[in-house]
Length: 77
Length: 424
Image (cartoon, rainbow over all chains, first blue to last red; front, top):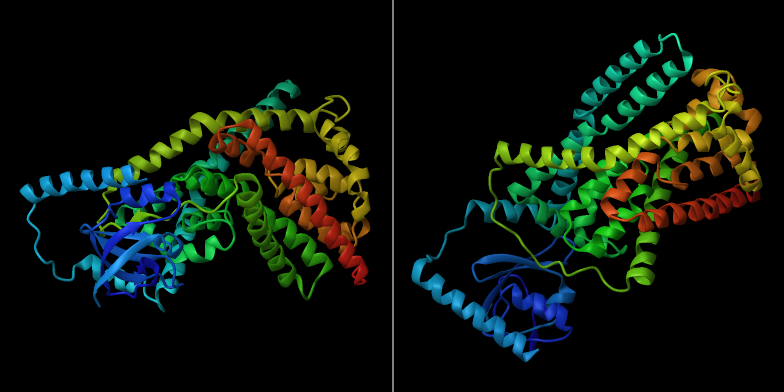
């Protein structure tokens, strides 16, 4: 089981589940991080946190602490 | 939770269905936006580029707007000069120092506010604003703030009024409130003349280091207070930084000007009234009782001076006397007035102050006064803008109260250390 915050830039993955705090989960879902959606890690910020991912055709930034709640399955590196 | 999840999935399925019917996606080549992003968020050059852009914003907001503020100032001084020629000296004083002085005091803030919002709108519309938050977020979350707090905090070094208005780019209410509440600790340019005077007189060779340390003290206190407010008042972490990094666009002149004009109008409609009334009250306090001040000429006999005298026992432990008290009361109008007020009390004018302050201050008490000037209360105009942006007198009063207590504690500590080290 991998979590989004551990993925390196360039990695593509599928969202399996969103866990943790429900307010945050709602926000993540609202931004399109639903089960089964494909995402790609684009880069980390210069200070390593937050990270930028590409999902549903747009770029989304989120902190590592928030990405930790996204359970993913890696597709390709 | 599961229901929420299902709902989100269903919603996005529907969206996907509609999008699938009307949008054709092609595997896109590296776009212009991507190329800019690889540079501005780069591990090595990302932060230098960010700092360079922030410097440019700061210069634009304050240096470029300064001639406009100067022109407004000159215009109202001119009106005041004409009004002061009126036969009845009471009416003359009210019109020149109260009415025109008050409007001049309010309206000089218009250019920096307009320029700040021109710069912010350009950053927002080009798409760099969220990137700036993305680049600096990590550092800001360490001190109880978040990426979007950076620009308002930086702008505070120029003037806290446009800086506090700049928090309008923040969506989260708690994050915004904390950023507003600690903003007055960022040492604005009005406090510099006070530091320069006292550091120059008492710490000749190391004056530069002393002035710099006042700025650093402000930053440190802002970091500490933001962390404390977050922890004990609002309880919790910064709001999630879930934001879209949109493709870069060219801003349109029309929307940039519209937005800047809109924000300036908000200031005029809301804060300007509070500021003007405050200016009239300050005119009254520094010129009355009318006979005792000889028609507003002798500030040492005014109500403001009485308040200053009343403050003396409080600041006495730091080696400060009533003259400092009166100067601080005057400085409430605008902090640079501290210097001018001292000049008036000692009867030497602003130019002669440096020669006489060694008679009233020691190096240690000078440090205490500098720290108090940095912290004690937000100036009158800042209080007006705090009320406007916090939306309540209760929170505004809280900011004033915590700053007074903090000023007292910090000045005490600094004075104690200075005396202990034999600086006095």
